[in-house]
Image 1: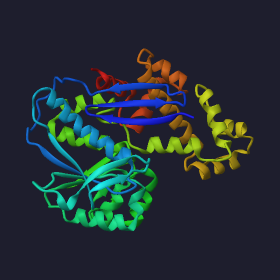
Image 2: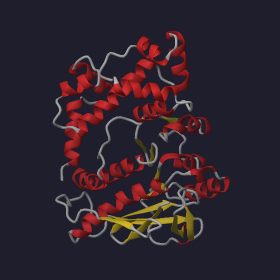
Image 3: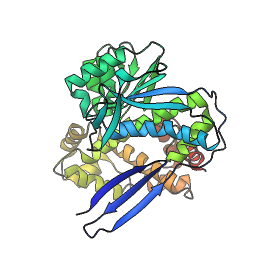
Image 4: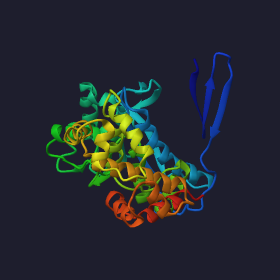
Length: 370
């Protein structure tokens, strides 16, 4: 059995894979050493406090924290002061356990001195359901000055809700918990689709990695488009991710909805035959069911109609081909993905992503350019 160890070092992330034979693979990567876009809207350092608690999701914490620190790294290489003073605080100082078993060290918010925070970030994680965590974190959030912005990553939004900070606010959380957030906090206005939402002094984001999108939006607001684009390139992510979270969640749910593998087999067949016309009648026959039974069964298990699922699969495949195979023409991609013609693909992309496929490809190429 292989043992995986993650070793964190100053300025770099080193990965060791150790086996019983004591062999290992070492990989190290640092942020880019320079940037052409260090002109920012302000040189004033902003204080960012991350709220810690046991059983938080590590990526909810590390993703946005890495994005904010990347700004500091870029500025430091050019002899400029850090843009952000970043701290992790909890109700007591010491070691916190994350959801993946990797501990993190936090200071105590009672011992924090100096200026008030500009931004308080609340990561999500299974710990948000703990009543003690709800009580301590919500009390801390309520104690923040009115000038502070408060951001929630993923289901960290529930802790903002317990603090009474979501009332009258338009908010989002992980797609799986949007309905629960609206039920638990009926005075909030939950919008299930956006990747993140900024309403007044409250920021909320969709699931997990959307915390990076939220951080990039704040970086762009604070320091301008050019520096935020540099950070996005360094992290190899979109500066502005196309579309909302719904197209990701619906497709993933459709692929894994039924434990017996019945729909998984069908979806695998669809993927192999996506270039063909795929009517509901064809799908029902492939599944070995009557048309009416199949349509009812599919909606019951996936929450979407077969016709919508096919469109989602076509769009997802076309999107990946646009980005992974820049040499392929739009006509060729539309043929491979089963769109009747490239004009129909264009209209479908606008409906899903708010932009045509040509613009999506161009945006990705611009973000990926060094």
